Each structure stands twice: as structure tokens, then as C-alpha cells.
Length: 228
Ligand SMILES: C[S@@+](CC[C@H](N)C(=O)[O-])C[C@H]1O[C@@H](n2cnc3c(N)ncnc32)[C@H](O)[C@@H]1O
Image 1 (cartoon, rainbow, N blue to C red):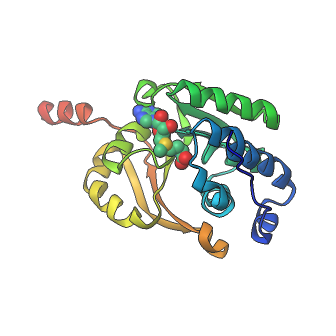
Image 2 (cartoon, rainbow, N blue to C red):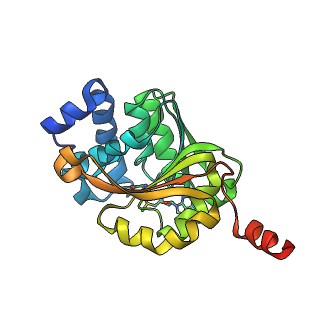
């Protein structure tokens, strides 16, 4: 049995989470305990759970509009989707994850934390293309952007927003896909720094906003091209 224990929250976490601190702390304990025991999170992550994981994910909340339906693609052990649900009761969060032992852990977390604004959906993002109509899709540490845009943009409604938590590599990763984005229906994109007052928890997020027609697939584009 691994004896990992969540460190006490730093003052920055107390300030950031406010009244949501107890529920986030309980979630951190589940990550540090069963999450580590079941191999969902590395034991060396426990000492930095607050800054690198819980606060880092919470920092993204500033880019999520009020009352949004958020789909967290490749949620894993719940990052960032479960943190967003814990700190924003206005959101409805779908934790989309294909692996059974991860979805079991996510269900257990939702029960233990009594979070009724989040749900677990077992599946792959590509299987839900055009069937989700989400306001916001988040993804952290899931895949390179070339693959991620193909998985995430089709889950969004017109004017929806994709948020990819990418840290240091954000500008480079965005540059790799930028030439394709307007063809896929995006109208604006960029790298946004979030959580700048949070020290180690600050991160860079790639934000892609769809236009009024929503996602356009490469197939649709080539058909239009042949009509010509
Ligand atoms: C490295 S983990 C990251 C988990 C979590 N987002 C985090 O930041 O800790 C990547 C996750 O993406 C999931 N995943 C892989 N391919 C996927 C797909 N096609 N659709 C949805 N999730 C996928 C994996 O099962 C895994 O849980």
C-alpha cells in the first residue's frame, strides 16, 4: 500500500479556492491515495498536486463562460474537468474518458465529493463528433494539437470554445495547426497565459473559438471545392 498524503494547501490555494477548498482538498486526497495506488497519478506528483495539478487546472476557469456545458476530453483522473466542476457550480461538466479503470475512479470521486454538476461518459472523443454540442471543450496532456483539433472541434456548438492546456509548448503547438484552423470553422485563436498570480500554477492555454457555422470537416471542404 502506498502511503502518499496530500500536503497542506499553500496560502495561494486557500485564497484561490475560497469556499470550494474543502471539496478540492478531498479530491486531492483521493488523487494522492487511491489515485496513486491504482496508478492513475504518479507518486512523485503528490508533493506538487496543489500547484501543478489542482491550481493549474483551476486557473483555466477564467476562460470558461458562465453556465457553460464543458466537455473534458481525456479526463484521466479528472484534470481539469473535475476541478472546474468543484469550483464552478454554474457549469455542467462531462468527463469524457475511454479507459474503464479511470471512469470507475471518476465515478467514485463524484460520489465522494457529492458533485451533481458533473457526469462521467466512457468513450473516445472521435465517437462523439457532432453529437455533443458543447459550449467549451477542455483537454490537458491528451494528444498533440494536430490530433486534438480533430477530436475536440467536432464536439463544439457554433461559437464554441476549445481550451488546450499546453504549458511551455503552447505557441509551438499552435503554430503547427494554425494554417488549418479557419478551414475547420475557427474564427479566432491564440495562446493565453492564465493564473499569472499563482506562481508555479500559471500555465499557457491554446484557445480556439469556432465561428457561426461551427466545425467544418475536411470532407465538407473538399465537396464544396468540387462543386465549383
Ligand atoms: C496523459 S492522460 C491525461 C489525463 C488528464 N487530462 C490529466 O491532465 O491528468 C491522457 C488521457 O487521454 C485519454 N484518451 C486517449 N485517447 C483519447 C480519445 N481518443 N478520446 C478521449 N480520451 C482519450 C487517455 O485514456 C488518458 O486518460
